[in-house]
Length: 414
Image 1 (spheres, rainbow, N blue to C red):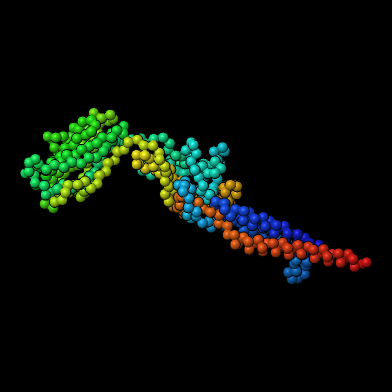
Image 2: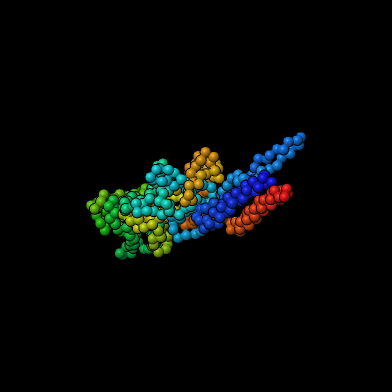
């Protein structure tokens, strides 16, 4: 009878612990990135009564472990580009600045602080890889930092036009047919320089042109020393008869507030035309234009893509990548040590983290403007709650019944 009492007590203890785990799951049903836990039980070592067979009696039950279930939770869309979630394996890397300890989390509720550091809700810094202007990694793992201040100006070095010069114009007319178009370039200080391209039809298949500038002095091509665009019978550019021949012309401008400009007008690819400059029998028109310079700009916002790449958006229309969020992968997620606030630390059983960019080495991609919700299933938790409650009641009954039997035994001699 004493054995049954103790067996019942172990059942009460084990199911009380299970009730605590279930309660924790239910309490965190709305916690970002929370992973539900499951209790596992094991029987207590049996007492062997002897004999030739396996004559053994169990001593009750014990809680053998609490395992987290790491399937992903549903995604909730948000309006913040710094709210991040992970599609697949991986965890965000969070650093405590005070003791330089790294933690790991699936909770991607982040925001930039006044100093430009990307922080979680506990003030820990999110880790990533710095990027150069082309999006290539330029340094080791470090705190993701917003590029505060202005975006430096870049002087124009190359322009492209998409245009058609009307082949139907009569070059013998007086005055000769003309057409002009403008483009804004920038010097090294970001000063806008409006360039006007002045075209005059000089023969059935050629147009002479020169360039004038709103600022500074154009030294080439100038009026009287014109450059020439030549076309063949199909209206395609004829590089061999252009001036300069078979080469992209260079527009030179001096006496600017910043450095002198030397701008290539690119309409050739190697020795072949790219088809953007034509001489068809249709109205002269500019169909497209590009130039690679820009004035200084102020930071207007950021964007994040599925590769976890942070891009700064500036008032001058430029977009500059500056950081890529890093992810950590583990051999055993269920053996990570809970640290509170949806954070974990590595353990001997979890293995060391393998750190990489999203989408590499088996880790998932990033879903910006979204948060991973708790993976707690309330229906399952309520079923577990009822089952655990019944198990607790049953073990209580074992104790009360054993007590009644003991009372009967004590009263036999009376």
